[in-house]
Length: 260
Image (cartoon, rainbow, N blue to C red; front, side, top):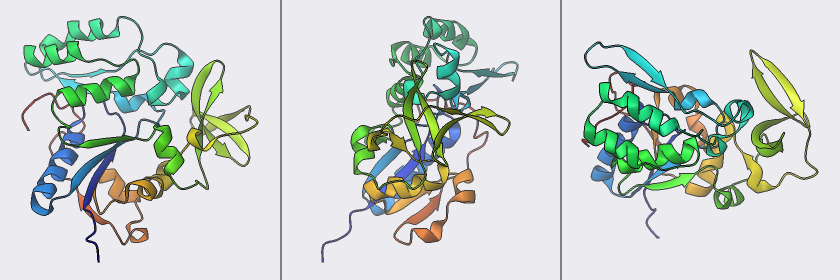
């Protein structure tokens, strides 16, 4: 009988142009596990999410201890509220604006890395930063926006679809035969449903995401974040060993060190 391949995985939305410390903790937990049992590591990069708050970068002034929240400037309001992160185009001059603010928070070396980072969209820029910080060396990245991934994945009984609305691509929820966008505060509004929604346009919400991911990646070990442990129905996946990520202090703050 052929031995099962060990696949260690962790998942995360783009979580700031400097990643949040909880992502660093997931990476470290995966690397530690790999040293123990071998196998390969996959980062499931959920860049299909539309919530612009995911990329808030929380920095701490080391002298004053002041907390400062920075985020991307996006081209327009529709993109900001409704486009998936892989479609939120960064506004002109944003990188230069952030460069002027960084000296109070971090070293010249990190600022130079930030200057060298590229990406038309917030998801692209975040991923390039994570790579240039050395966090993803030797780790395979699978993006939830990738059309090939979506075509290989199982069909979704409930899904979101990346469709055109007022000249932009938005992430709309299919609900009772209609596509809707979330205004906030429990309010939604419907948008036109295309004649056909292709499989490569569909992506999973929180409750179906693990099933969707697992249908392609065939994970054997999954590094679960604190919030994931609260909602994942682990008994649905007897083939997967779930491992809680290591504890890290100030988990919501930005990770801005190159030390691994």
